[in-house]
Length: 112
Image (cartoon, rainbow, N blue to C red; front, side, top):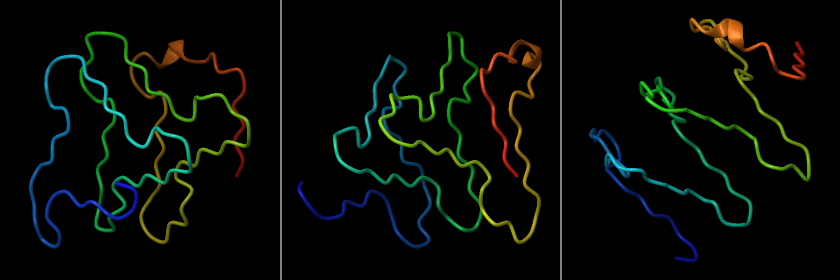
């Protein structure tokens, strides 16, 4: 495919589950990994979204990388950066029972 849109699943009020590589063996799923500019939107609905990444009870090492590649230009990671007009914003980072082991980050800059 060189241009166009591919839709998988229903539109409108359809409900259901879409599974991608749900097997129990080791699997690799790549999404937009080629060269060129990529925009990937996940869970951009407006009536409440739950997005879970790496939440299984892992029996082996678990690594979640965000913006961890080599950088030849600026990198920006935004968390809770929207302009909230109602409700509260809560950011929990290292709040589990093993949090005492973390404090090894070389630089953490927080700006208001």
